[in-house]
Length: 92
Image 1 (tube, rainbow, N blue to C red):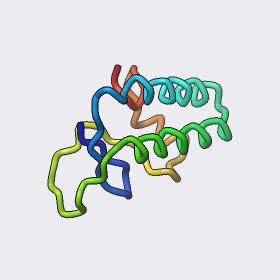
Image 2 (tube, rainbow, N blue to C red):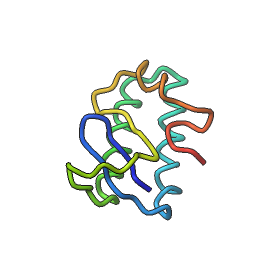
Image 3 (spheres, rainbow, N blue to C red):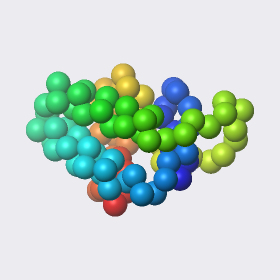
Image 4 (cartoon, rainbow, N blue to C red):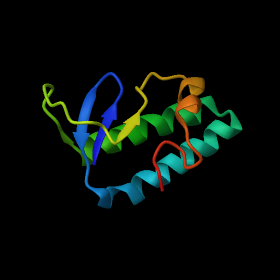
């Protein structure tokens, strides 16, 4: 799957990693619902770091469509809330 981190670029990520990422996504959703700004920020960084760690960076000139778009590290709680689906940022 091709994942875009807004403002950074794309990475190719194996589907087998999504269970691990979904745990962080669930935690992020709980912190957002509770209005926990510091927890939200910590977990957003952890989620994006994990995507960077597990993914393989795509070349900057690659024109692949992104199947999943994640917010930039400096995105506000409200900006991320606008990106959410019922499943959070990551489907499943």
